[in-house]
Length: 168
Ligand code: FEO
Image (tube, rainbow, N blue to C red; front, side):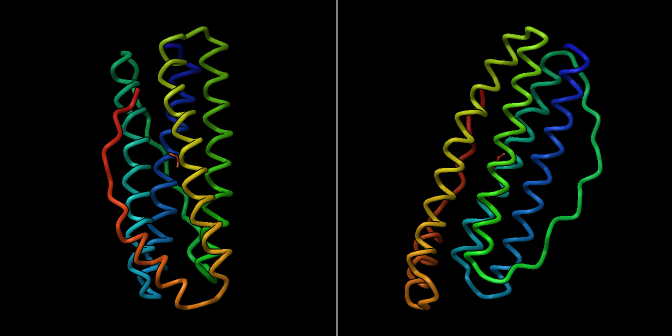
């Protein structure tokens, strides 16, 4: 595997692990304020991010490369409302989308078609991720600060389950 591309994958593995860590901090916030359905949604998100990281980790090895792990940054831990959390999630997912696009450009630059094909999966996944988050954010905007609407949404988010993605 091209060295520049291998390094770019390692950086992205770190960003995916950071995403898991950030969502774990958000899960802790929801647990603190007793919104267990929101906490469940966030925990599924944590597992998805770990799966995204492992998908790249395994891929680098599959291609005969090696993975250098880096420090994971401390995530933001203070939030002031569920709406504020989901605004941050959407902002973060848009940032991740831009990182995946940059990584795909590196794969393109070094003419690695196999890596480009793997990254197509991640590009599609980001579309889904942003849509899911926008949906919850839209519901939160509708709910405003009505506790009954928030509790109904909490019940709905309690039903989300993690399904291990088939990456690639
Ligand atoms: Fe791994 Fe939510 O992007």
